[in-house]
Amino acid sequence: MPNTSKPSVLVTGGAGYIGSHAVLALADAGWDVAVIDNLTTGFRFAVPEHVPFYEGDIEDAELLARIFEEQSIGAIMHFAGSIVVPESVEDPLKYYHNNTVKSRALIEAAVSAGVAHFIFSSTAATYGMPDTDAVREDTPQRPINPYGWSKLMTEQMLTDTSAAHAMNFCALRYFNVAGADPEARTGQSTAGATHLIKVAVEAALGKRSHVSVFGTDYDTPDGTGVRDYIHVSDLANAHVLALEALLEQPQRSLMMNCGYGRGFSVVEVLDAVDRVTNMKIERRTEGRRAGDPGQLISDSSLLRSTVPWQPQHADIDTIIRHALAWERKLSEIRKA
Image (cartoon, rainbow, N blue to C red):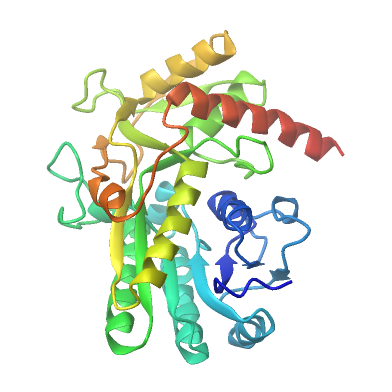
């Protein structure tokens, strides 16, 4: 029976890493949800069987219009896009197309259909290399790579669109997302992923020969890059709470950081993986990657004061254990 107390939610990129966790968080909280994904980097197995699934592109206006009508969509969570920073430096036009042009098409379709609420998967990369230990929402946004710019442009489109039309939005700026669903229902499944914890647990299971450490000369305690790692399920829960906040105050839009406010260096993360797995992963030092800042740590006090967000997995060892469990399950899925 349809849920009449909450709008149906379309999750774009819902077969991908973060999107599939958002689908679970919505479904677990009693929302009606549908997914659109072109399966370029997503996986059909990541979407529960009971969730309506549309294979297609968010640039397809006719398909979007059909989904909005068939599923009575009242809100969108937008995750579809490209996310690899070094690739964005090498192929900027791909990122401006996938992340900015296609987002514009999605926003236009949403306005045409009267969709009232929009949650956007943004990024701490919009801040570039901030001159502060903990990044706040009012920290100047000066991206240093096309990935960050492509996301910032979409934030601006949403800001302007919400001022002109009956739609409010929330842009959630993620720091480093890691881990997997605690019940191992989904996780990071992309082959050749660049996320450090994903790479490290692959190495621990023999799927990679080593882990590359990109840069040991940053102005950080041990010279390696420092990041604020947030468990993907805590992040997904923040999306559900943000949507509830948009529903409560339809005239208000939000931009909020998502992180724990605690940084771990590359060396600290790899030490934690060694500790959790009781083994030693081979590390190889390489030069810095283009577009990588030395440190990015969030100030998430706005998120915590705006919605009742209580992280459940804010522990680096827990994040690694969940990532490891998913990596083992993923091996079984691929054998089947």
